[in-house]
Image 1: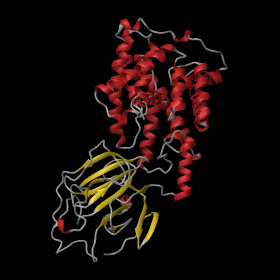
Image 2 (image 1 turned 180 degrees about the vertical axis):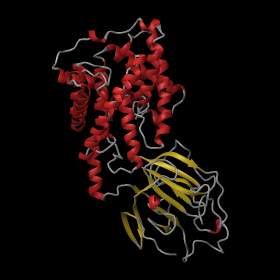
Image 3 (image 1 turned 60 degrees about the vertical axis):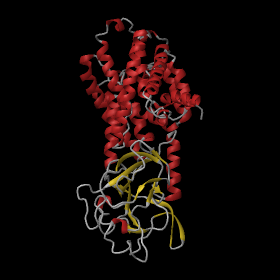
Image 4 (image 1 turned 135 degrees about the vertical axis):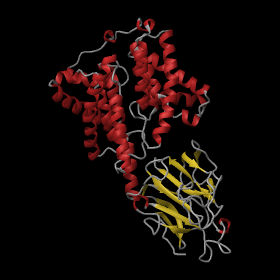
Length: 504
């Protein structure tokens, strides 16, 4: 892919990300739709330009940058400024400053949140735009360029339809029936699931809100009802699989967001700060955190371009491989033996039962001579291979390898590496040799490449490779069931299973 093609994708992906769709054509269509309000369209383009310029200035890694992942919050900030103020040197300068800060905040929060596998959503946008609104109260030169958006051309529709379309358009700072209808048709053409969830979330939230405030009509006029749409879409189709159970779970999320929206609006009205997407962010982040901790099975671990594609991928995996669709390659080459398997004799118990320990043996022994030294053990110093492709999210390699007969009870996991696989789950490999790690946090590792050496650090009675998979990218996270994609045991090639333990 050429650099020009990368740049085009970097510009278009942030637009499609706002609708949870990973498609450059959706991005292009949404870019054009934003120009139904020229100020919003122009300001959004400026925000992307300044974000890319700042990223180049700080020499940001292209492997992250071309995904467009860190830009959509800056895009929202730019469009928000364009919705308020006429494009001018002052407003463009404000966009430049805010875009740089939003970009850095997005990257920082993503690194922090990824430890617990929580998406940042549009939280950076909510935070930065709050500061912009507060600061602008002192900027008299900027306030003179306030826009009266009610003068923008629109068509009249029944309130029950208009309320939904304007809420959908407001996601892009385009609260008009025309923009909302175009966005709705775009959503429908790419994902019927997102279409249904947008309608369900909005009208359920509006109905519930009307019971609380005593007026259905007044609920339809709520400028922050787009939060209901975002919550429903995120919780049934994007981060969770589009199932009947998750549909009802998303409605619970919508109900919570109704309460949060009114509460935050009362609090923010004192300083005339809009609510923006804060209720949506709080609701979805809390849901995902709680469901991650409880190992909820309805997670969409491999998010595709559309919810339909995610569901199809999930179902095909279940039909082909069963419920255990977390697959690894063996973390070594050559012939090794199972020292501990799932739910085994010593440490693989309870929440840590889904783990494997491997050693090398000859003639029923794992060591040469008397086995008094770590170097006597056949696996000590052997290469450890990456069982998946993905990014390193945690690592340590400074701990000394134990003397045989002693263990480190303070640093149980010893030297280790945690990789976030391309499929979304995390792999931890522990008890590595001191200073043997090849990669650092943030590096991308390829499947079956050397990542470290087998060692004897941490709570390790003898040199071995410990491997486990987990939902969270934290050291010692609770384990989840997995299998190995292929291996040979007893002269048989076996697929998608786990090897048997053979007593040494």
